[in-house]
Image (cartoon, rainbow over all chains, first blue to last red; front, side, top):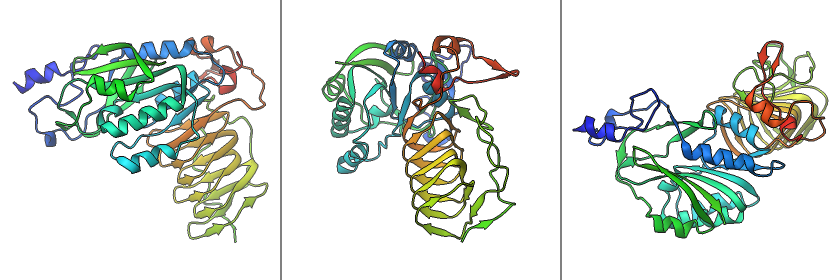
Length: 215
Length: 172
């Protein structure tokens, strides 16, 4: 049964059959660390394509995740500047707000990569981030985000790596899964009211990748 | 206060490995003389300026301005200051803005909390960085091909693949 569910939760990896995340029913302790697995991301390809169509001079991108060498190499070719926040999703309330106000002078950004970090924020924190992003982006700015449509999912955000304009790889530091909060579409819509969903793609593991455009 | 130490040198030339936004080669040759060294047991409170390369293995709180030289923050180095240099290599910890006239590299053991500004920037896997990276061109003439060309077919230089510089991509 676990194997069957595991297959259902397997991401689509061209030419590969490994699972990106532990299947349901597997003790998280059994899954210490997953190696990165690559997959073709239609949403990211769309984000990258649209981002390249924005005016090139001074084009800047904000990465809310953790930067790595290949992602940086790709983004540095795509933009004149890269902001790296490595958003700490463990913080709540005032501490989370302080994290944002530390970077009050950042922006404007023309592209934002939120990866799967929005899943891990509380409703208040998500709203704060939505306001912060609204102030630091201009109409037409593009936001890429991966949102969980099912629980359980991994306890910590994954580390994403941009292999090229179509291919991402994702590595889960902690492969364990447990039920955690998940935002409903209406909550997300309220929190990110400055953005409108342009396209979304549902992956086999229940993650939904979105490209949103700043109103 | 400072000592010369021939045994302690930058471990490798800038951009020896890892990703960079530039062509992977230093644009200028720097002094072959051993760098001035702030040893691991030294704490410096105050600004540093001069015309020789510097290796920081100790702690520095104060601005470092060596615009024509290489500044290396070694693995045990901790700098809380703005650093301005031709080339900056970070293997230790830096809290403050980095301004590189030529290039900046953050090695895998490096921690940077601050903004980076340089025409070419390298970031190795494992490096911890939080801040803005600005690769806007300053004064260098655009010599590389247009963006689309460089993206589809990376240019070769002496048989080695090279990346596209920030100068080039902004030239169009």
